[in-house]
Image (cartoon, rainbow, N blue to C red; front, side, top):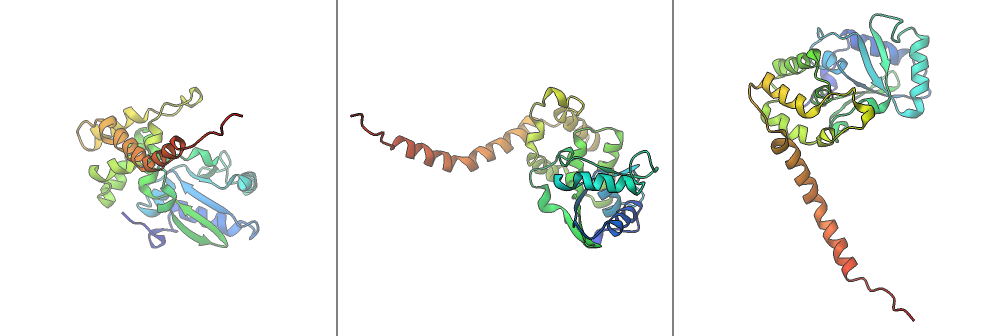
Length: 229
């Protein structure tokens, strides 16, 4: 399902706060700010879908600058009930091609990028607490999408999230089990995660790489080493 700048509700709480942020920022440096978490759902789908914060990140070279600016304005965590959380860019993990679907707008000289709702849902699936399940129900209730048939290929684009995690990542949820729970909750059925998501994604990736691999093997087979004198 497509979303565009026309769908952005700047009168929503998150919209007003982000507009205030962009307006208050000096024109230089020009910032590139990505909005993820629940805020895109509030601004794009349902203004009453509330959260206590707005999750954003910027390129690493501007992370410290944006963090300090938000704190100086009194908009950071612990300074106000509805705060802006400036995150590390690596905090957001979703489909490999999420950037291609993001909604970008210029606001007071800065670029705001809103993650597409489906990619927000993928990021929430990694944790899948009760409020994350509510996000799934909200999106499907308001838009009738994604359907089960649509979300399976979408999750195939996030196959790397199903790989084993580092020990230091134990705080994250279990994507494998969370996907099964999601299917049981939303579509009242079981899903074979390996058969439906993991294997097709890996097979497609393997197929896409085969021509180059075969060509390389052929060149190596025909390579003649210099004769020893």
